[in-house]
Image 1 (cartoon, helix red, strand yellow):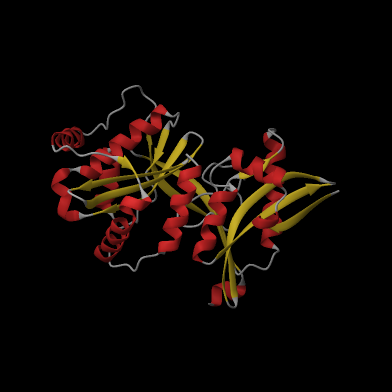
Image 2 (image 1 turned 135 degrees about the horizontal axis):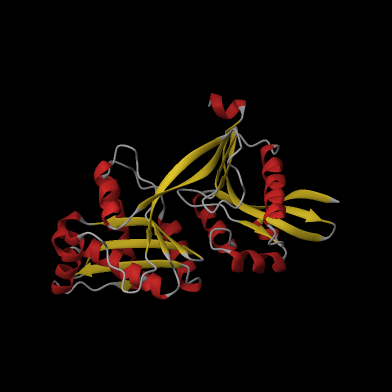
Amino acid sequence: MKSVERCPMADLPNSLRAQLDSHSFFGSTGFTTLWESIGGTAVCWMLVDGESIIAALTGVEFRRRPLTRFQAMPDGCYARLYATTTVRDERVKYGQELMSAIGRAGYARVYVADYFHDLALDSDPSIQQHETLVVDISAPGWLPPDAKLRSEIRKAEREGVVVSAFSVPAQFDGFMRLMAKTERRHGRRPKYTRDFFLKLAELAAIDSRVKWLHVEHDGSPVVSHIYFVDRTMALNWQIYLAKEFSHLKANQYLMYTATRSLAASGVTHLNLGATPPDAENLRSYKEKWGGVAYTYPMVARKSWLGRCL
C-alpha cells in the first residue's frame, strides 16, 4: 500500500540520496541543503510503496511564524520529480499523489515551478503560467545572432578580458563588494548572505553542475556569473556587474565564453531566466542572444492564513 512521507534531507537513506543526486541538480541533496544557510529547512516528500521509495520531490521550507511556505525550488529555480518508473502516466500519477500530500500538509503557501513539466500541473486551479527566455546553443560554433553582440565579444577579446573559474581565496571579498554594489544599483538589499555564497562555492568545488565564472581587471572585480546545470539545460541564475568597467564588454564576453563551455559539456539550451514585465530593455537584450519565450506552470497555493498575511 502506498503512502506519502515528509523527511528532512539530513535523515534520507543513503540510497535515495545517491539517486536524487544523479537524477538532477535541482533535486539534489547538495543544492536543496544549500538554502539552509539562509534559514530554510531542506525536506523531501517521498512516495513509499511497501518498503520501497518509488518517487520523491525535494524542496525547502521557510518559516516565519505563523507562516510556513514550501518552495520547489526557491528564487527562480525549479522542481524535479524523481521516480523509479519511466512510464509517463505512472510518473504523472506519482507526482499528483505527492502534490496532493503537500497540499494537505498545512503550509500557508506552496510554490512549485514545473519547468520540466514533470508533474503535469496544467489542470491545477492554482496554476500560474510563467515565462522565461531560452537560447538553443546546440549548433556547432554557435554565436549570438545579434551583430552588435558579436562585435562586443571581439572588443572584449582585444581588451584582453580573461574569464576564470571563481576562486574563494583570491576573489571572494571582492565578489562580496561587487554583489553589494550591484544590489544597491538596483535599489535592493542583498538577498544572500556571505555564508550562503561560501556554501555555494563549496558546492561548486564538488559538483560540476554549478558553474561560477568571474572576470577581474587590474585586481578589481568586473563581473561574476553563476549558472546551474540540470542535464541539458543551464540556468543563468545570477549576474553581478560593475558598471564602471562596461567599456570592457566583459559581461558579454563572459556569457559567450560560458555558453561555449556549456555547449561543449553537452548543454543544448541556455535559460536566461524570468524577465520582470516592465523590463523591456532587459527582454530585448536577452532576445539579442537568441532567447525565445518558453512557458511553464507554477503552482501558487495559499491557505486562508497565507492569503491574510
